[in-house]
Figure 1: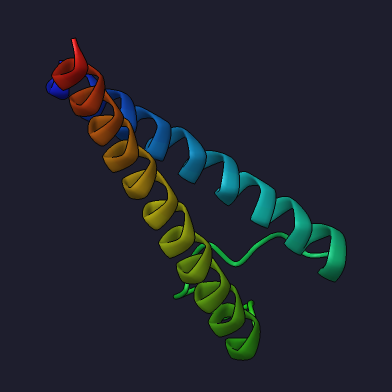
Figure 2 (figure 1 turned 30 degrees about the horizontal axis):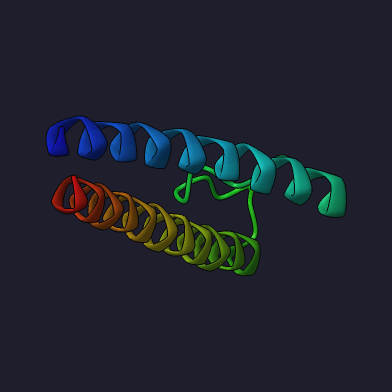
Amino acid sequence: MNILVKIFGLAIGLGAGALANKTLEGLWEKQTGKPAPKDSTNLNDSLPGVLVFAVVSAAVAAVVHVLTQRGTKSALVRMKKSADEV
């Protein structure tokens, strides 16, 4: 059962990461009027813009990672407690 919870946690993490990325790209385009600078080597995008997007993307990814890891761990702890009570 632990393996299923870990796989489920991984799937949720991937989905949440993809959703957060799409949301961030949409917000970026809405605020700046330009598409998100996904390619850091594209010289048409300004360096400050690329750096800001990279920092914000990394912060969002870190938050999503922490939340999914903690959620998975909480589920494992709850499952263990309920198995011990039975």
